[in-house]
Image (cartoon, rainbow, N blue to C red; front, side, top):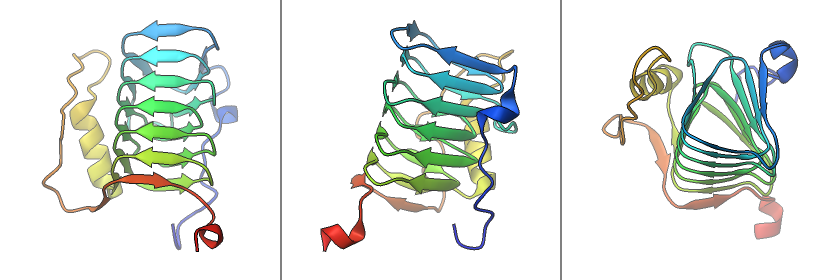
Length: 171
């Protein structure tokens, strides 16, 4: 956003030796809890969690599909997500990224062609971290997603479908 560090992106190089890959053609059913980097080219049916205080990064390629909620601090979404997305760090919606659900973010970057079919909810960093902590317990504890957590808090919200595009072309 304005006046903030724009080059504070997290990349896979910082997760050398701690990156997990779900290859194209692979289907996983169940929740995933990870630390470091997670590169998905296949299909995941279940929720994805990473410690909100970490610099963990989830990258969904254009062949990736996730059916479930995602609670990860940093993400690059270039595939399809059917579920809600919670990011307390940097969220990039790449050109072929589609989210059918609400997007809760602290910092978002939408590339031309990306879509959000749901609400864009700007959470201040503290409230995004707290909401993610409420809905995603540590791996040693039982995971209990809290549906609709934090709906009564004041936040910037827009409801409907959004498609990132060139403003000059829509005029």
